[in-house]
Length: 190
Image (cartoon, rainbow, N blue to C red; front, side, top):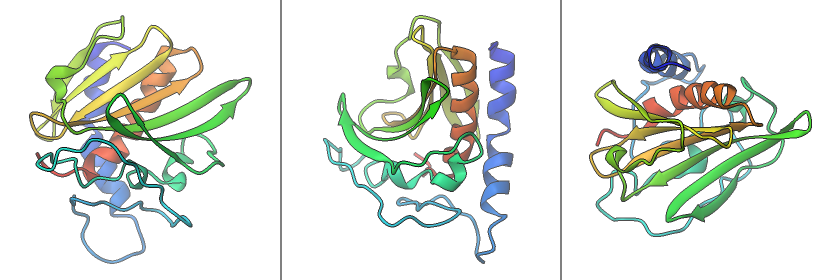
């Protein structure tokens, strides 16, 4: 996917995110908070993650499993399993998986409490960056077929939205863009 399409898709983050947040039957005003909760329904439990969290990081209080719900993910695929929380490479991660034909489709959110947008690494196909809603974002397509949209939360932290829809990088980037549009409005300003 070209940079122009990436910019166009990410420019709609605010509209898509705020429109989704404001269509709930629940009263109130949609605001980004330090500890967002899942919207669009409830789950029996929300897994928590552990790992090295910098106390001063704007992402320190975020639970990656609370930033997306099964109901929100249902727009892309049916994720029947509960989200899986883990620590990977120093990041607190929550992932959702489902089968798509004979391939596994996955979406994962990673809290990079000590790494900002300037720390992203090329996955072999370049890195596209853009600013949306005052945030730095980077899209990192991967040679493996996956894609990451990194959303800056301040200068030294970010939330990585990882997607894999089999071995198709373009489809993975489209999935990451859509999931990032849901997550971005829920993040605190850094």
